[in-house]
Structure formats: C-alpha cells, structure tokens
Image 1 (spheres, one colour):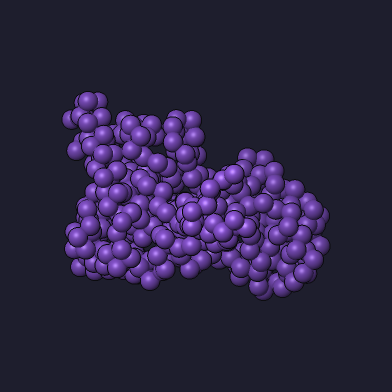
Image 2 (cartoon, rainbow, N blue to C red):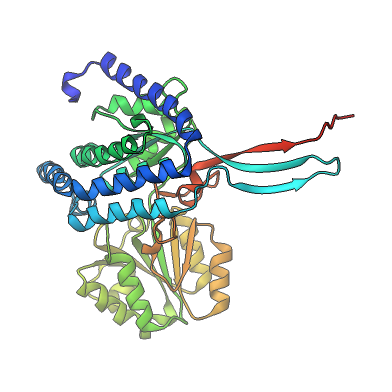
Length: 427
C-alpha cells in the first residue's frame, strides 16, 4: 500500500482495524498455553530458514533503495541482511522458545495474620505498539518476544526496511497459523505513511496499551511529544568506555577497539573514550594503533591530538554525538571523578564500561553512575538482550519506570494480585 495512493480516511480505517484485531488476539494469547506459543515460535523459526532466499531478495530491494536515497554506511549496515543474519534471527526465535514462560509466574507470595494468602503473578501487558527504524531483524525479535510474553503486537518498521520486514513478518504469521493462534497476534502496519505513526501514538481508540519506540533522536522526540499511551523508552546509545590508570594495557586496547568497531551501527557501540591522564604514556599508543588499524577516525582533546597527529580536534558537540559510524571521540581525564562527571553530563543513560584492575575504582563507577547497563572489563557491545540470556530484545530501555536495560519477554509483562481467603471479612 503506497502512501501516495491512500487517503487519510483509508489509513484511519486500516489502523483502527489493526487495533481491533490486536485487542481480540490479545485476549486469545492471554489464555494460550506455553506449548502453543512455543510451537508458533518453532514454526516461525523454520519458516525463516525455509524462506531465507525470499527474505534476502526483499532485502536487496531495500538496500538498493537505501543507496539511491543516500543512506549512510552505518544505516546501510543496520539494514543489510545476509544468510548468516537470517539464520541468526531463526536461532533467536529458538532461544526465546527455550526460555521459561513468564506468564503465570508467581513473583511473590505471603500470608497475612488474618489467614489471607496473597500472590503477585505475572500477566501480559496486552497490546504493544512497536515503532522502529532500519533494522529488519527487530521484526523477528519483537514479534517473538511479544508472543512469548502473551502480548499482541502491532509493528511499524522503518520505511527503509519495508520489504525486508514484510517478508520476515510473513514467517511469523505462518508460525502463528501452524500453532492455531490468531494471525492478528503479530501484525505489521501495511503502509509507509507517517500518518499511521500518529494514529499508533494516539493509541488506536484505546486498543494499544503501551508503545516501544526504537530509533534515532527524531523518532524518540516525536514519540515523547505525541504519545497518548505509556512508553517504554529506548533513547540513543551515547556509550562510554573509561580506561582507568590501573587497566591492563593490552586488554584496554582490545576492549576499546571491540566496543567501537565490532559493529559501529548498533546502540551499544562506544562513542566516547575517556582515558586517565596517568595512563597516557603506557596505554594510549596501543589503543590508538588498534583503532586506527581498524579504520576508526579519532577526534581528540588537545592532549590526545598532541600525542596522535592523525587525530582530529574534537568539538564540544562531539561529546554529545552518537556517531553510529567508525568515529570515536577521545578525552583525557584526571581520574575517576572527572570521568563520572563527564558521563553524567553527556551520556544518554544507556551503557558505560570501565577497564580497570583497581576494585575501588570499579566500585565507585558502578555505584555513582546510573546508566541502565554498567560493565567492568567487558565490551559495551554486550549491551544486548541475547547476550544477557534473554534470547533477544526489543531495545535497551533507558528510562527508570517499568523496564530498564534490555527489554526481553519478562520485561513485557505486568502483574496482578491473587488473594485466597477462607471466609475472611474486614472488621
């Protein structure tokens, strides 16, 4: 369905239909057994593998359109699929299937002095709207996690990945049908029109219970300004690596290079390196050589530029920039206090790492910073639900309400209280 051929009335009717169907499907999913949901996930994973060639053909259309549109190399990397990435999507569904079903799990239980037995039990959120950009694998991850957690979902992928996401979505629907679950449990907005996003943000007449945005600043800003339903926020990943003076030099070079260059276009990629002034004589040269050899552009403060003439001078804006590219800003700090102050000022609350052997420095870093994920002697690229054992993730929530950090199946639930009595009345 092309935006040019649609009237606003058509889009409203289409979106309202999606909402009603999702609400009806959510009621069915809430009663579905773990075996039914797992059967759907297994079947969808098999379909992803069986239809790999068709998915790659759809992705080729998106890639060509992206090149003609002038997308950056980082954006094209996010968009690109090959046989390995499709296989990884299928494995992700199998890993989600293997997780314990969160629905019905008794989170806590206690007995009151009057004999009332109270349980706090996990339940689905209901209908989730997910708005995301570029990365077609989010279609598989998000659909599978919502299914596992008993939620119906309406997916609105980026226009750049329209063909890829549509092909992946077809596999999820086939999985639902094979398991006897309603196909409307996982729906995809069938239009690229931006009007559809506005309708989703307004909640589709009460049919959407929560929104999950995953994308850049412009998308997040629009969601924050226009959403009329609760939002599980995924802000930009302005991630830092801090190299303390006690860090092992070879480890520091390896971790910093991996954190920046393994995949530059993901939200867990490091964007700023902070290095202790006392560590410059021993640590900076191997770090710089490793990054430059990997093709990374360095933007440094005056001390860094004096030591490495291939580095470009950094501006204040560099400390605020999520490059999603092979660019790293580098700043010298006097010690951990200055490193923490810099991150608190410029960070997005996503992921920060410290490379250090000093246990007190690590303790300070973990205690004083309030980002969703903090790592010690590990790459920021581990900021990923799959790496946390969640099978996959919808995103990294950077807010402080409801979910925080990787949003997996368990984080897509709420709870209710079950109270068991034996005739008690309140005096």
